[in-house]
Length: 349
Image 1 (tube, one colour):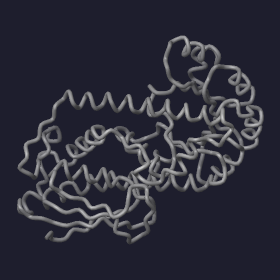
Image 2 (spheres, rainbow, N blue to C red):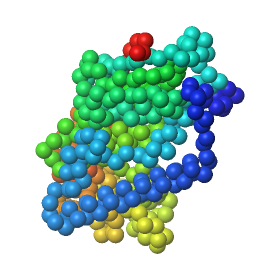
Image 3 (spheres, helix red, strand yellow):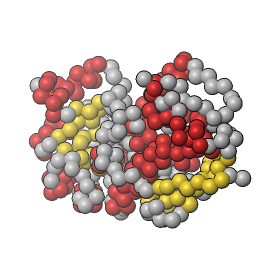
Image 4 (cartoon, rainbow, N blue to C red):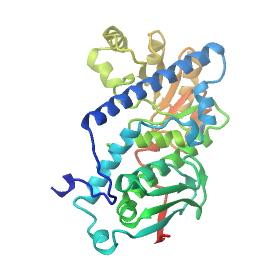
């Protein structure tokens, strides 16, 4: 099949992909994700001991620029880009290869066509440089910054074939990330004045989780678990399968797994049972606002509480007012509207 073949390069430099380096990079990325989760849990514990507001919330408030936000492992980003380019380019960009001279240079302006939060400029840069390392992308704003319709956010210069071939992949990834960051910022703004931290979920696009969750951080939110490996989350089906919440927690603790444990409860009776167990967080699943408020009073700060289930921009402020510590919403990533961004090209200098 054509899409399994190598992606054409538009420079004279040879390209060598060493499988072992890729595998090591993936392992490092996995370790980084786990360490980030552990660090987050430690910060929560220290915050509670000191009786201060959640340190995680402070980090969220202060981290609106790319310099202060942990970026994914570059090998993970490059792997996503390679797959995206292979899918789109196949044997080669038949239009560009037959219309644009090999030596042609172009200049392109990335323009915001709607108000929002820009995310993914660094990803776009990596797209073009996989096709030609000499392509330059000048960022006029930073990832995580607000832009208005008509703002020029970046300028790309270099080989015309490389830029035209990578244009759609760069825009697809950047528009999705910017849409996620924009929606996250709306949620964060909606809970201003409360202690609630906005979290994402695992409801991400297959193969794009690293970028989706990075975009949430750029929007001012924080990440829930990255996968099934870095936090144990006991849900109703787990409880039903083993015969009870206490038994499920007991089995995980007995396994020796060094991960935080979160349990899902749907009513106050389950909440009281969970409070007696050695766990790290409790999720209030699909509870009414009044019931959540009562749950906060019963818990009295002993264990962090997370509200989840059908959270929307219209309801998140009321949920935050109950005093929960976290609010998670799949809508940040699973049904995001991409931010409209265009790339306008002209002959290069």
